[in-house]
Image (cartoon, rainbow, N blue to C red; front, side, top):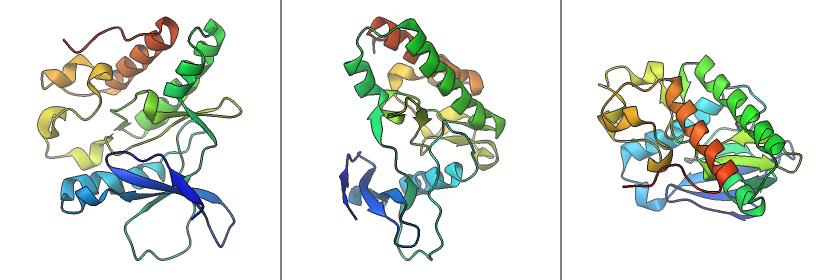
Length: 204
């Protein structure tokens, strides 16, 4: 373990180095408050499961691992860069071509999800990394919707709204069926935010 990385309410994150490969990895462990929450732990494990099934330069990849696991953790590639939230702070008035390039990459990342009958469901600035070369990677898959795993549920509202309200498509609020267009709605909100410096809708 090299150092602590920014944590979330769901997990602690550390930068580690794999002894076998020398690869730097982001090691995530569930927050201690979730240790009795089986649904939250299932969502935590979903992240790596999803990552191992998606192959895109614009989706965070699971780290290769040869060792048996004796503890609950997720090992993902380490991205040297900043979140889109920080990028927007650093670029309050970005050039249209810069925004177009980021949106194109995000669209390609979402296409990888949709091609596998998956939805991200929580696309927001904190769940997007921009590395030092300008490559965009979608991260944080714990809120994802996987068609085969979702059988038996009545709809996206069965477990409540999965994502962040300001980026959530209208159908989630009325118990509608989530589709790839739901992720594209979040992408459209992000595009508006990058170009205008504010969100199109509040929380009223």
